[in-house]
Length: 411
Ligand code: 7TS
Image 1: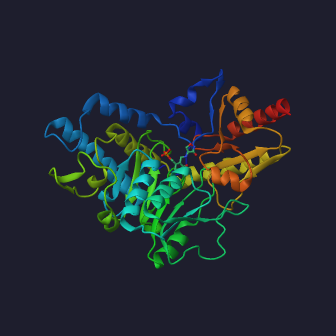
Image 2: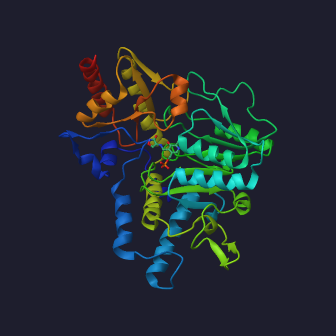
Image 3: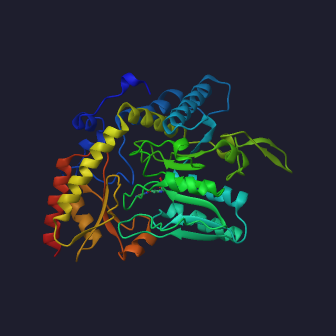
């Protein structure tokens, strides 16, 4: 990041102008996009970087000697270096490209399962995990005869830690940095420090952190950190698994195929060096280049300025929504990103979501791939708002007014 390119704060209208989709009408109404936790919108620069790859350098990477292949390889590896710097990894080869957080966590669970899980061992997760950070561990536990242990969640939507949750059998701690449903920012650094004292491998699901917090993997001290590009203003189908070099070196590959090998005979194969050991097959080259551009775009703004803007929206929306009769916010942690999940007495979230959509307002409804968390709070689903840096106070007011109107119609 060049310091000269950093803007001290930002003008939200200038920011909005960079997102072509914000000019779209939905049901003849201006789009209000409050579903950024599902996927964020993309600035023009990212869309352009991805299409420029197809228009000018489309070729496979790490293969041919020809000019286009070299250019494609250089562009992809430049994106890897951008990401390395952004998350403060020590080495670029500690950044593995995947198709998203789900793939990153499946890689982690499969490979760590092979490396360290035995009968009777435990994997520790929390009760607010996305299904992507539950199911891969359940599968790994089943394969190796291990058990899944769960950190309980308090009424405010935080980890209920009255004592350290580890046992002598805990081998892996896998927790989310930020909850997609509650918005809670978890104290991962503190728990990782305790896990490390006990020799436990630590995995962080950073899907909801990467676009809202300054992520520094060395400062966090985690062994593995997973995120998706499409939640950080980048293309869908892109993701990262960061891993500490010495651990990645010991982990077996997850998928086999082209580019992940050193030698292949019909009897036995040996593996390529990092990061390629974990990157079988042709990657989403255009997407990775777009992701690099998305990270550079975010760095042109200060993360703290974007986060401060989103906090303002969070505070305003929380206050306005709580004034609606019968509305309950699920997730009232002290530290949150701009995510609000709520239920309204006597109103189904699906009906509310449908009426909001008719006003051009996009929210997510349902269990948000966190069914155990819904069970914990005794609800079948919620309506969820998730903000990005391009959202405005006026949009929040429009959403609150539309919700009030919907409540009148539905009651
Ligand atoms: N982990 C968390 C915390 C997430 O929020 C999500 C996606 C994932 C993992 C999976 O990411 P993917 O890119 O591989 O799909 N969360 C959501 C959401 O909240 N609404 O839609 C997808």
